[in-house]
Image (cartoon, rainbow, N blue to C red; front, side, top):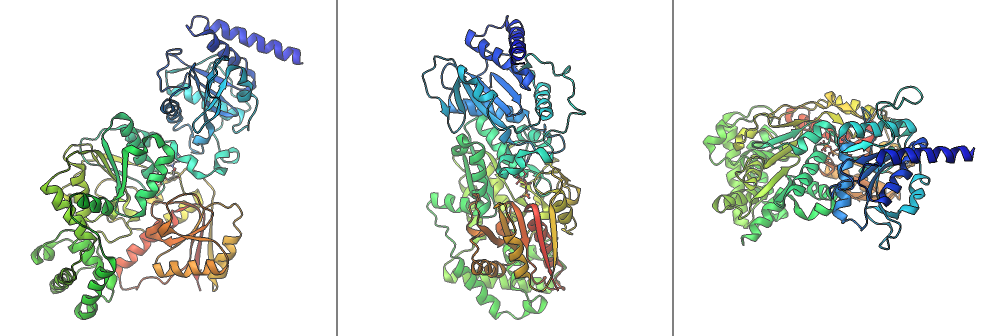
Length: 634
Ligand SMILES: Nc1ncnc2c1ncn2[C@@H]1O[C@H](COP(=O)(O)OP(=O)(O)OP(=O)(O)O)[C@@H](O)[C@H]1O
């Protein structure tokens, strides 16, 4: 038996010798390839770089696919630069994009970079952050030992996929057309039950792009462009890949920003895992943070004293009788000033009288507009008497300063994530930061997830997209059941100027999942019970509509001895603590399990509040990857 086996291996080795005879490869490399070829009967499929031994520096010499995964192999005399081995990895990973036909379960975790050195190599060996370095006499370590993470059919399907995606790799000792299907049909690569990646931390997932994403990563746009698509469709992922792509291409300045505080910080963390070598080339800053630093750089202070701003508003609010009569909601009028009057840069009552209030819920009679205007003037006076300014003022000042004196060095690209939350002033500022060159401003957003008062169009900031951009459709985050439930939320999209898709039209890449609709009286007990029953230690978050509810749940959990972390301070890193926070704080993030406790609904008379409430609910539900727990009080 063993004799026959060795005989067979010897035959394969000789066949490989014949096949590679004319290749001008160094002898030691040929030996390595013969060895790989001899493993064909054990389900290894080698694909050789057609340029080998003159393989471009940032490409693999060989890709070897087998049940232990996809090996990105570099045959090198000397240790390769870290950037080169990383680039070879990324190149292969990108070729595998879309291999997850329909299932999306393929993740970067199936790939490993291995550097094989000739036997006499005396330099560093072993595992480093980026690759495993071995000498040719240690090949058994690769071929025989290790966890089997793919089925034989999956390995073959991946090898065929690689073969069909590029002319750079050529199968050796196997022919992708001729290899018969094994046991029935070739499966969709990595379907659920066998997918090891589903058990791994989900951060492994984010490196593979589908065709729509990949197209948009590299496209050049002739003006501002927009990436839209429902929750979980990989908009941020795409934006980060685009930045990485641009960073690799040149040395220009790149900016990733968002109108919400924590979003850029968490994106920076994601980027750091994806392309650590490029992290230094990209600035991650909230729009306010950027404006503040920019003004400080020009010798102008721009710190906002939140407490004093609040006091200024409250002073005016406490004096007013009329507005309360129309709508007795402090938040509503605060939004009217922040998001409509100041947010749109309206500078006269006449302009305010005629402004479209689309998305602001109901009409305001003309005399209330003049009253709201007086209220605003009063607020401005309060601010100036107290010698403070609010967040809108910071953006406005930065915009004025940029108009006065543009940036000495332009950004190559500016990405604005969560763009639907911008105000018009914010949008103008982002536009001004990105400068005049086309192809610089990329807006990433989804109108159904708008959680702050909006009611403007891109044209209000002088931006037109002319159809530039991409609409994504595959939901990689939410499992089928979660997506179906969230898709039922009536979240009206008031934002998009360009084409868009509602969540109900998104296609779940991962099926299954679980949604629990809990009805009863004692939701604290029920939620704690469900939380404690989670056995896998994976991420869980309680998402609330209000800050007071966040405080309440933090207390409840702490009293129950459960370790918690407020979402407001979470930087996006993996944690076993239970995260608790508001929808706004959870934006852009994802958790394996999400709990949505019941909270009092907004007043029935306020149309807009209800709309925003529904959109926020959609955001909250779509943070859940696998499990969603909803409570309904009785
Ligand atoms: N092509 C892909 N293959 C596998 N996973 C992907 C792919 N694209 C994105 N993902 C994963 O899907 C999840 C959601 O991606 P991302 O956060 O980029 O979506 P988004 O559209 O920005 O979401 P939201 O608008 O809800 O914040 C992430 O875990 C990401 O790693």
